[in-house]
Amino acid sequence: MTPARYRVRLAVGLLLWGVGSNDLRAADQPNASPTRLVVALKDGSRLVGNTATRELPVRTETLGDLKIPMAQLEYLDIDDTNLTASVVLRNGDRIRGQLPLRKLELATVFGAVTIPLQVIARIQAAGGERSVERGLILRYGFDQEDGDVVADQGPHRHDGAVHGAEIVQSGGRGWVCRFDGSTDYIEVANADFIEKIQDEVSMALWIKIAPAIQTKTLNFPHLVSKGATHSHLFSDFSFGISRAGGLAWQYANANNQPATVESDQPISKDAWHHVAATFGKGAIKLYVDGELQAAKTGPYESLRRSGQPLYIGCRYPEPLLDGFKGLIDDIRLWDRVLSDREVLALDHD
Image 1 (cartoon, one colour):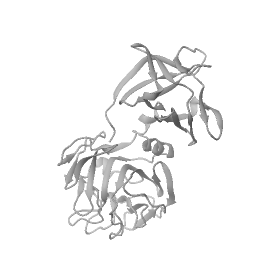
Image 2: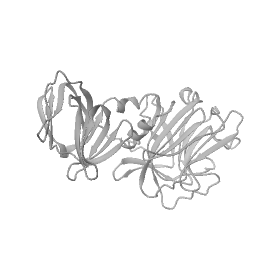
Image 3: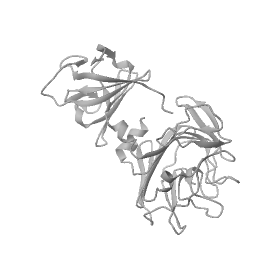
Image 4: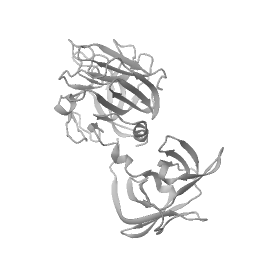
């Protein structure tokens, strides 16, 4: 679940790393090309502004002092201890080290604002958090305590019907959905914007696999499945936990011929993980915690269109087949292929 944030847009504000100081200062640099940033605070607030600085100093243990080009910054997360930062660049490079700075000064519509770095959770290049919303068609964040309906936070407001699954609170993620693996599921009625998916689709969600999950079901435990019925066992597309404990993506073509791609690395149980899958004309990628686990090309370039519902927590119900046992949060579905960079950003959302 993504908590609601109070957003403040800066009408003005140029941020400058103070040369020879421990402050990130608000200043004007007319000759500098500004980089727009999003600054997320630990209390849920968010500030948007520009920085005219060209380089970000980071002190690493193994590589010494580095200067990160601000134009290449994807995001950085700040830990509570010693202002240690995890920095991710647009090309995928990751660097961990201490920030020699201690506070951030912003020029805002309220005047000068000084923020200790200890209260900052993330500094991110603006645009990345919005671009990932392009092509989003469904999003279920389980942000409400309602046992019958799960609200769609995507553009279509296409709510799902809850059958047995419980909306509960989980430490660190807030409201999530719990599935028992035997009777619980969520049904999402078919719609034109879902049914049109054929050549490209992406899916991402947070999962916590129960220690007692049974992975050796008829096929494999399904997180999300679209189109499977008693007469057509295989889904238009489905995403789940493989029999070996990794990820599995399965889909069928127009002739009901199935194909499956799996990742080899098992996912640890009883811990939260971000998982994602992308499909683009037969090219399939599977991700765990932002890291690519498998990249293969399937035998079919397009997906079947069955006209059947989408299910969360099983392949299909009544009787329930290939159920998932554990917790699920923040399910998102796109009608396009996400990039590696976009999946990585979702892992830190």
